[in-house]
Length: 149
Image (cartoon, rainbow, N blue to C red; front, side):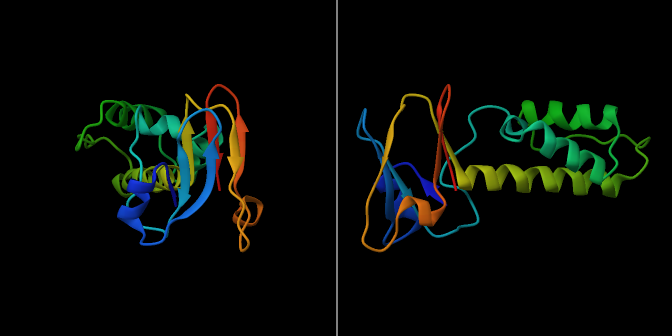
């Protein structure tokens, strides 16, 4: 799991591993043991973290209709704790499984992906045991720095 500061990383792991540091400011990226909750929050709508292919595969896997999925999308965008599935839904269990798959996908993205808009260049921290390549660290520079593993 990825954490963006040493203080945050120490909350999750006693010995966090420094993977990369920013060359433009003091931001450091740490790798910590996997936890049930991610070390970062979701700023916008949770579905924005998933790409179109992931959403399409989840939706087609559980055979959720367009109208039902728009209700799910709206509820996630408004960050509602609960929302009403009307009785005209063909299979309520499929809708619940679809929502669970979406939640799991979002949690995995939050654990394995860090987006920072102010940092443009990352340098990998060298170690005698691990390199960023061995950990599977990939830095993608576009509008914001995206670090994935």
